Each structure stands twice: as structure tokens, then as C-alpha cells.
Image 1 (cartoon, helix red, strand yellow):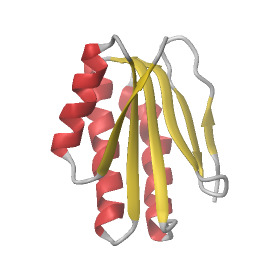
Image 2 (cartoon, rainbow, N blue to C red):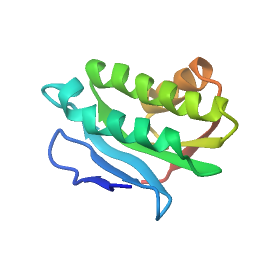
Image 3 (cartoon, rainbow, N blue to C red):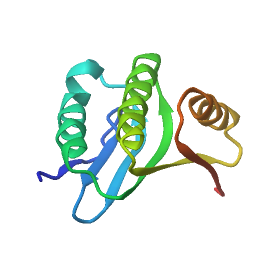
Length: 126
């Protein structure tokens, strides 16, 4: 399966989707000009992955900021992960946030309430 690897750059998040290495993460700032186009490879990858998923998947979000358009896309990604979990696969979300970033903590709490996934909120010290 193809590996998706986008290097974090300015307002574009870093993304790693590597089934073989069992590394799934989105990091950094997410404010792409056209989020639908930017994240399309992620949705294509998740669709292919869902056909033959691992027994366990740990997906990490280590975001420092994202805009409103990206928040909708993140919800759609979580919904795709929820669909994979509904097929009997173990999908765990690790939502990292800076200890003093209440907005990012609240965002994680909100997403946790909106999806039926094993969700862990993890504070990071600066």
C-alpha cells in the first residue's frame, strides 16, 4: 500500500499514513487554501486502507492550529476512522495538545463526543 507523507510546511500540516510502519498522524498547522483538494489523498488512502485494515490502528493528531475548513475535514477523517472501527477493528485516537492550549483541548473533547472511538487526550509540556 502506498505511503502518504507530506512534510509540514507553513500553513500545511505534516501527514504520515504508513500501514507497514503502523504510523498514522497529522501534525502542525492546518490552513490549506483548498482543504478538500489538499486532503483528497488522505481520503483515497483511507478508502483503500479500509479494505484491508490492521487489527489495531493508533491515529495521532498533534496539531498546533487548524482553521474552520480544516476542522470539518478532521471530522470527516474521524468519521472514516469510525467506519473502520465499526467493522470490528480497533482504532484508537491520540489527541495531543500543548498543556496551556485550552482551545485544542476543547477541540479534542468535542471530537471525542462526536465519534465512537477510543479517544485519548494527551497534554504536552512546552
